[in-house]
Image (cartoon, rainbow, N blue to C red; front, side, top):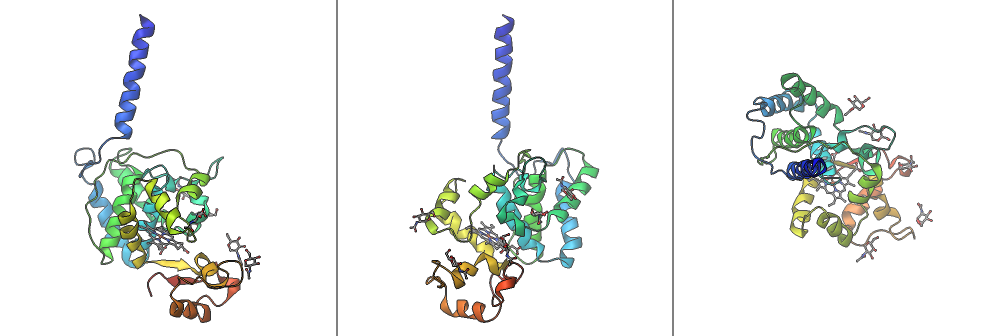
Length: 245
Ligand code: HEM
Ligand SMILES: *[C@@H]1O[C@H](CO)[C@@H](O)[C@H](O)[C@H]1NC(C)=O
Ligand SMILES: *[C@@H]1O[C@H](CO)[C@@H](O)[C@H](O)[C@H]1NC(C)=O
Ligand SMILES: *[C@@H]1O[C@H](CO)[C@@H](O)[C@H](O)[C@H]1NC(C)=O
Ligand SMILES: *[C@@H]1O[C@H](CO)[C@@H](O)[C@H](O)[C@H]1NC(C)=O
Ligand SMILES: CC(=O)N[C@H]1CO[C@H](CO)[C@@H](O)[C@@H]1O
C-alpha cells in the first residue's frame, strides 16, 4: 500500500518534471514574479552599450552557443569546476561578454532573488543590445530554466565549426530542430561582429593541405585578406577582421 503511494508520488514528480522542462515559453513570464526584470535589463543595456557597441554581436553569438548545447539554459555562462565547461570549448574561446551578463544578473537578483533565469537574461540582453545598436526588434518569450550542466565535449560536438561543410551544418541545425531556412536566416547574424583570421586561414592558405585556397571563397576578398589583414601568419589568432567589411 505504502509502496503504491510512493510510486504514485514518484510518477507525479516525473510528470511535473517533464511538464516543467517542456514548459511553454510565454511573453512576460515574469510579469507577476518580477515585473521590473525586463526593464532592468533594458536600462542596463542602454546605459552601457555605448561603451562597448561590439557587445551586440558578442551576445547574440553567446545566445546561439548557449542554445546549441542542451537548449537555451544559460549553461554557456557556467565556469569550469572539476569538469571543463562549455566556456572552455574551442568555439567559446572567442565568445565575449560574460561580465556584462553577470552584472545584469546581479541587478536582477537584487530586485527579485532567485526568480529570473540567466538563460532569459542572456536572451533578452542579446535582443536589447541588437536593437540598441540599430538592429531589428523581435519579441522574446521568457520562462527558460537554467541548467546546471556545462560540458566542453558537448559544446564541441554541437556548435558548428567554421570549416564544417553545408551537410554537417544542416545536421547540426537539424539536431536542434532547425531547418535549412533557419540556418540561412540565422547566419544573417554574421552581418555584424568580427572574426579572427585563424577562423578562416585554412581557406586562405591551406584548404586541402596543399597550400591552396578554398575555390568557393570570393577570390577578390581572399586575395585582399591574404595581402593585408591576415598576412601575418604568426598573428592569425589575434588579428580581427570585420564579418561584413
Ligand atoms: C551556421 C553556422 C555558424 C558557424 C559555422 C559560425 C561560425 C562563426 C565563427 C567562426 C565566428 C568567428 C569567431 C572568431 O573568429 O572570433 C563567428 C562569429 C559570430 N557568429 Fe557565428 N557561426 C554560425 C552561426 C551563427 C548564428 C546562428 C549566429 C547568431 C544568430 C551567429 C552569430 C555570430 C556573431 C554575431 C559573430 C561575431 C561575434 C563577435 O563579434 O564577437 N553565428 N561565427
Ligand atoms: C565565473 O568566474 C568569473 C571570474 O572568476 C566570475 O566573475 C563569474 O562570476 C563566474 N561566473 C559564474 C556563473 O559563476
Ligand atoms: C562533409 O563533412 C563530413 C564530416 O567531415 C564528411 O563526412 C562529408 O563527406 C562531407 N560532405 C560533403 C558533401 O563534402
Ligand atoms: C598544410 O596542411 C598540411 C596537411 O594538413 C600540413 O601538413 C602542413 O603543415 C600545412 N601547412 C601549413 C603552412 O600550415
Ligand atoms: C593559435 O591557437 C590555436 C588554438 O588555440 C593553437 O593551437 C595555436 O598554437 C595558436 N597559434 C599561435 C601562433 O599562437
Ligand atoms: C571569454 C572567455 O575567454 N572565456 C573563457 C574561454 O576559455 C578560456 C580558456 O580556457 C578561459 O580562460 C576564458 O575565461
